[in-house]
Length: 90
Image (cartoon, rainbow, N blue to C red; front, side, top):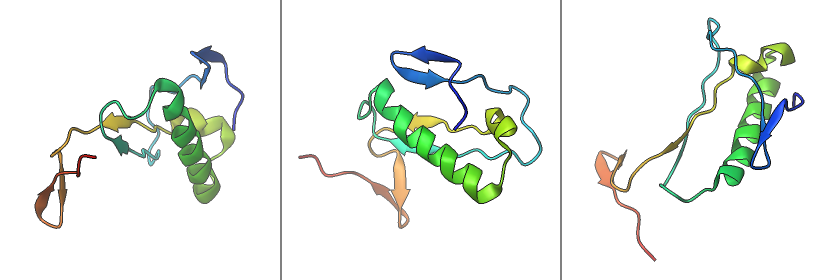
């Protein structure tokens, strides 16, 4: 992984290239609202970035073009098997 250029509450922050390259990967991660803290979002972002870099051969100097948005999707905001998915509450 590239070295961080700053931190936000202990989370590494790297500059992003605001101009998307042709064919630049975008990986969306969906989680229930409020399940992850800012710090907990860092691990899956870093992991997915590493997997995409390894599988695509994207050069490290292009990592700023790889976007990994973390989206919070409300309950009943999913469809599975043609039906609205409603998670079971504990």
